[in-house]
Image (cartoon, rainbow over the protein chains, first blue to last red):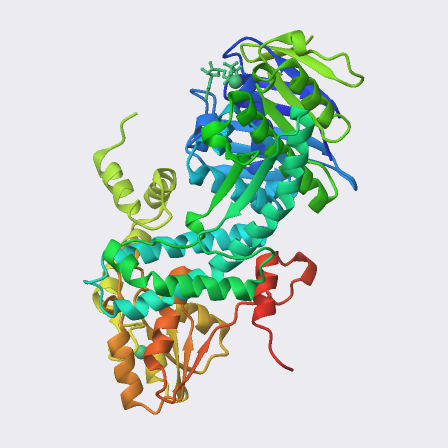
Length: 369
Length: 198
Ligand SMILES: Nc1ncnc2c1ncn2[C@@H]1O[C@H](COP(=O)(O)OP(=O)(O)OP(=O)(O)O)[C@@H](O)[C@H]1O
Ligand SMILES: [Mg+2]
Ligand SMILES: [Zn+2]
């Protein structure tokens, strides 16, 4: 799958942009605050149906405009098609396939896959478990509509159960209601646990391989699933259900006393360590960055394996923080594997590689370098 | 631009209707101004009359303007089956289908702790009373297929429990007339779970 061309209208600081992308590496360089990240955000939105950084999608609309619009021309394995997304300043989103067929914004990822690395992604190492759960959820959701739907139902059930626990002593017949919500959590949540466990099992060796290659050292990146409901490796759904139900039963009194949910996949975490030490506490800046990039690359590879087509990889400002050797190896790792779009503040990274396109970004305008 | 005060008032009132935003309300108001006076009076009167005359059926809580609703009144309906719905829209939907011959029970909502709604906030006591009095043999739970609707259905089925009454839940399955290949994965998964023996 190749994203051949994108257009942006009224998107962030782009009034009108039309730009061709390389099948290999495309570089956008420019000074700070010119629109490099905005451009990647536009590409990402065409895949995820939402921004990778804005709390509200309407933030993507050029100030003072009614709506932002992005369109991508994709050449797939079987056919060529276009995807587009418009976001109104009121936050209303419309996604279209081939300009005519309306689809849900979340369904864009069934057509165009993108994996983004932005500086905020360092939260994967440094941030709270929520950031790591979000990474897992996005990764699995891209590939599975069932996961997407199950996550929505599960989260809603958690909210209902929290509300019940908060008012436990005022709510009539609350023990019976608690049973019912717990059964709902087990039904939906166990599938989440199983799919997360399978996903990490697939990602971990890929991430470790990427890390070893980019770092060019014997340091080892270990990625482990740390579920709130303990399960063994490659668990089957029934055994997850059993452990989850058991854990809910043993924590029932505590949950009532606390007035909130205490167990379940909404408390899962992902463990990241480098040669046996937690990456968050002991990793250097470069190591942490390399770890996150390795994970993102693994995500891209997992998508390729599941889809038979590689996603577009978006790398925002990663080169400057890596030493020359890691930088070279990172680029080499991508070449010929995935279509890659990179931003950098310096054009010195403009590579003399066949098929590499290089652009200069200045104040919402893009020109070939 | 400033509109006449009575126009603004009309728009404000129309906006209280579901799904009517400022733009639609404006368009509706202009349309009303172009209708002839009798039609406008008819519209206003219909609203006032409906509100005055229509009340919940004392048995099933469906809307009616008589002592009992048209379903409860109908001697040809099968009194051994009660279909439980969240709101009167559910009755209208199932009646449009026209194949259901039993009675209804309108809960008037669902169980949703987030909205402060528990078992006492839906008409469950009334349902249990009906089950006691009547010769009901089956209760069909037709609450919405969302988290709250499912919880409400499960709760009712637990309450009725081992009273000997058969409790069934509407199946969630494939839409009729659709191709299997176009069904989304979630629908397919649910349909697979809800498969039955032939
Ligand atoms: N909705 C919007 N409408 C118009 N301009 C916006 C909007 N959102 C952000 N901008 C502007 O876009 C500019 C460029 O932002 P962007 O994050 O893409 O910069 P960048 O080129 O990635 O810079 P850096 O190298 O510092 O990361 C910012 O100066 C910001 O003021
Ligand atoms: Mg930037
Ligand atoms: Zn009635």
